[in-house]
Image (cartoon, rainbow, N blue to C red; front, side, top):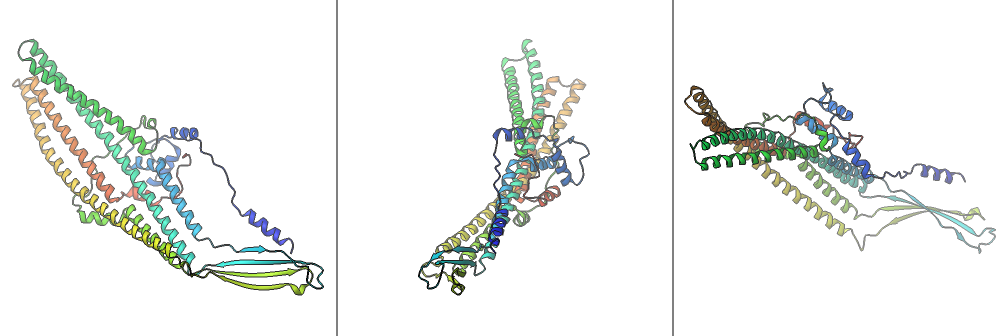
Length: 470
């Protein structure tokens, strides 16, 4: 019997967790970040898991929106923050399910006045076994599970934000590249016009004003070209940030964006609302927050009822076995002065706050959907009108080219027609950019994923797929 307390103590100590230091080194994490590349072997495995097959070549010859999105899911540090918050919430669910431990107390006493007792020492042992009432443990677990569910939806929201940033920056990068190419042609045509006008000025055929006007237009085109090139460089930098890699990781990478991808032509606001309110992660997260607030209110109401404490005790006297005593105690807190009304009132207020936040978020989502649907329709109409104007400008340019070839027009007329055509093409490019931005806004408002993204989200785990993440 004497060895049992020792064995119990050893078992308790063996089951305890031990602290393991994990210091954070800024130099090491910076080196790990700089070492990220799109030819990472772990990324290849991650892409294969989500594409359903091994990439035909590695690294990929072309990186499109889907492959870059998966790369961002693999690398981006914001997702690791959201994962960590999810893990904290899941750990809270484990904490909520824990049962209170019993306790034992020893209160040795000394009584030298017991007749015929050769030992005056008394050793009473008292146990305290807490018993929760009113289903508090189940209500506590239900609240923690809803909090964990909300954390999971917060992670999915972070996933969508990463995807949205990748799409926007990739679209801006490719669009600014196309714009720079058109402006380069525009600048070349205006430079040629300036040369021809300079020759005419030297011959006395035109005034200085005509040449100056052409030079101003040429200089403006050069400034626009420089701005487009700067925007392209900025978009490339933002794309690297959206992927969670350094800028050098994009060196030599062939980036592609499918400008032909569009959403359904006849998507109404009512249909879009139905899709979003059934599937948006932040909406589902807000509902989980409300459910957690309700579960907390149930728990606080249950706490009005006091818990029971069983207190069996044994008092041993070494001098006379007849002096040893067993007793059974019962402790119950009397809810006279405090009936947990304060925490109940706080829980009711938190439930109202959760409901108000949900209503505000729902109104915000509905407004975003209505704007996105209207913006998409307007962008499509603008693009259709621009296509008509572009077709007319192209026909005009072909007509002037034919006249020049026939000797009925001068080379200057053809350069002017090319400049006008490039201006229309730039306007049409702006229309395409507006359409793609409207598509992106509606996708963000709906959070309705493509098949690939849906499969990736379904495989989401609290564990980071990138083992080399800082």
